[in-house]
Length: 195
Image 1 (spheres, rainbow, N blue to C red):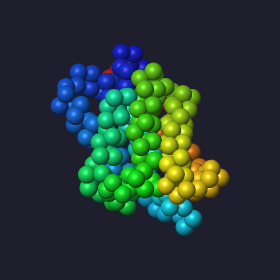
Image 2 (image 1 turned 45 degrees about the horizontal axis):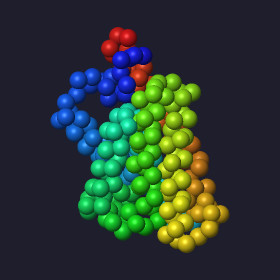
Image 3 (image 1 turned 90 degrees about the horizontal axis):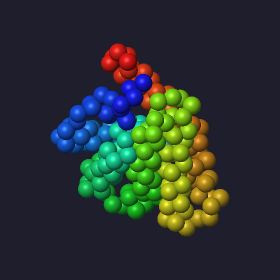
Image 4 (image 1 turned 45 degrees about the vertical axis):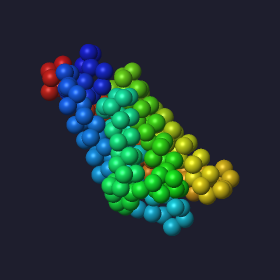
C-alpha cells in the first residue's frame, strides 16, 4: 500500500494545489448529486431510496475528512441554492427542512467521519472498510430518523418504521459495495504506481 498517502486523493495527487482540491471538491459534489438521482419511492414511507449514501461514503473515504466534508456540504448547499441535485431532481430549503433533511445533514457528518477513518487507513482493507462505511451509515440514519420524527411528530417506533427499516437491505448492499470499492481502488493505485 502507498504508505505515504493518507487518502486515495493523496495517493493519486500527492501534490495537489488549491485549484486541484477545489475541482475535486466540486467533482465530489457532482458525483453525490448524480448518484442521488438513482431514486425511487416505496409506497409506505416519505423517504426515497437513493444512491446518496453510497456517494457520500465513497466521497468521504476517497477525499478525507476536510475535502469529503466540503464536497458533501457543497452538494447540500447547491440544493438549497436551487440546483436540482437532491433525489428526483428536487431542491430548495423546503427539502432541507422537510422529512429528508436529516439524511442530508447526516450525510455531511458521515462524509467527515468516513474521511477521518480513511485517513487512519480504515479504507485499505475490506475488514476495516466495511465497518467504516457502517459507521457512516449509522450517522446518516441516526440524524435522518431523528429529524424525520421531529418533522412528522412521530415516536421512535414509527420513525424507525418509516425512516430506517425499509432501507436496511439496500443500505447493507451499498455499504458493502463501498467497503469493497475503496480497498480495490487502493490496490489499483498501488499496481499503477508499482508499489
